[in-house]
Length: 386
Image (tube, rainbow, N blue to C red; front, side, top):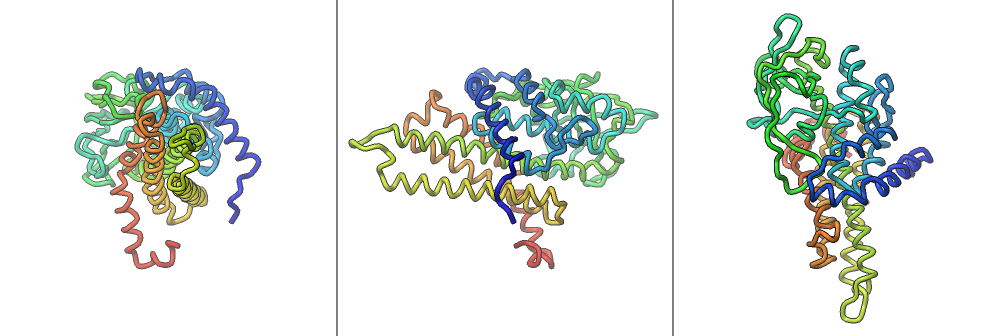
């Protein structure tokens, strides 16, 4: 059990930090204020391989372990959780397309996605199917050599500004077994995009509802086989939960760094804030929670890389703990800044707004508890959850 990073891993993290400092940090507040989606910057991330970190090499990806990918995402999220979170979603959708797409789909989209020249959205959630994703109602009917899709998706990151949709739709009966996965061109006739949602955070990426009205796609745009879509979606979300947990860890690390500097700069009662033991203890607790969250995320990533049978449980644990702990660390950092933490001249309020949604998406933290409890109540759980 080695907790030290390799030289290659440190190099990936250093490259990501340098990119974030040069390309994200100077613009993140402006993108947030103007709700600007920085496609050009995401393409620059693609030039470094950051848009296909764990996608297969056959489509131009780096095929890195999930653990290595967390190092990249954490460094970027310390400066801009919103844009980084979209890049993680794009990575997830790109990996799914590369892992389950047929030859035509991979040839058409693969390298364009891993390079960041084209972008992908992940389409699972519906107006009536959020936590209960297995009840989704969007249908894909086989008609000759095509599938015809009807239905709607909601809260889709990047919608209206991306190029391909990795879509879950029902091809069979009720329940998860009737769901299949598809790669759908985002500009296909019959697709309509709703208004851009006005959100608390994540403002550097658009979020819209998508409607599908007799959208026709070739049958070879099916990912995997019919009925495998829910399994594919859940495999994607195992990694997605690690990704979003990592974004919380990164945002918390950024907030902690701001708090450390501020406590040395700010003076009250003739002393710096760093001189007050109560605030020292607060900072110590923040750092401890952050390190615990980081290690849990890395453990879950290692489990996923190893194909461990309990990997999904650990991904749920990491997502639940890291997103809660990360938000708490950011909130405490804002509190340490007093009124300055609440104004946009400082990044704390933006980090807080961006991190709040991490406790909701990729499965709410309540659903993470359901997943963990189910595993614990299995007969063999005492031998496996250690």
